[in-house]
Image (cartoon, rainbow, N blue to C red):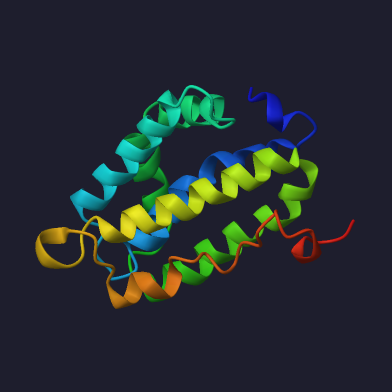
Length: 161
């Protein structure tokens, strides 16, 4: 169990662990095509975050990185294949993080939020543009800011209990 998740309900822990997978699917599938490069980039990022020595998220990403690709495939299968149907469902799930963040250590929540933004950006960049380098397609650009998730660093934006 991840130390920072003490005090969370099982369903909240599950959403926290699922969130990076949801972000990957949301961004990679924005153009209705979740390609291998996008999945590979998400796996690479989770492994890199796992190995960062001082990161508050090391323990989280260590757990997430175990069988990441298998977990991703399972979650992908639980959603419709068309982006127009899938996006609202994933956005609604990710919006649930707004109720969880106030229960977490603020710095952990901020770091987690930033890691989701980085994952979204790097996933979007992984298959767009010239030879798939550093360009974000129009569909991904609409979603890459993860507007459904409020920044926990902005206390005014957090839901009040």
